[in-house]
Amino acid sequence: MELSPDLTPNLTPGQRLARGVARALRSMDFVTVEELVPTQGLRVDLMALGPKGEVWIIECKSSRADFMSDQKWQGYLEWSDRFFWAVDSDFPTELLPQEHGLILADAYDAEIVRMSPETPLAAARRKVMVQKFARHAASRLQVLRDPAAQISAWA
Image 1 (cartoon, one colour):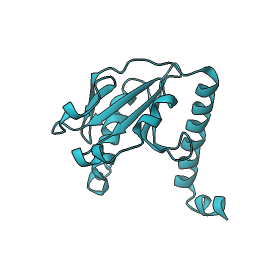
Image 2 (spheres, rainbow, N blue to C red):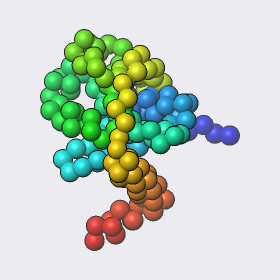
Image 3 (cartoon, rainbow, N blue to C red):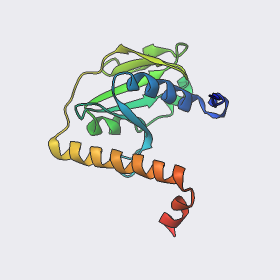
Image 4 (cartoon, one colour):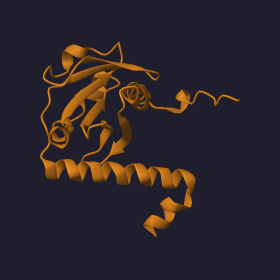
């Protein structure tokens, strides 16, 4: 069996973090999608759906400047049961708000260093988020199989 090449050189630093977090969460029976839009004007780096319907949002920060320039992250809090920061081992973690979860990651793996407190979504909001997750994942899969599907969806 031929192994596929390592594609990490083509990923941005934030995408590398998201990949490592996604791998680690998969080992916990979570599935993930990147760049999901919970509502107009917001786009989360990584959303995870757990085996019991848990909704986690993970915001990947690749540098101090990346964190300092982010003005939207607080808007993500109302769209998940748990909110995490994902950073690499060189990131100055003292900048991050302590009341949220912390994940240390690289392109290959991640570790939850601080569990986020749970703030359960209301049933109606959970239903909306699970549907958004499903449609986002299905759309990504459809475009992978048929790249022209992305064009025809907007025609």
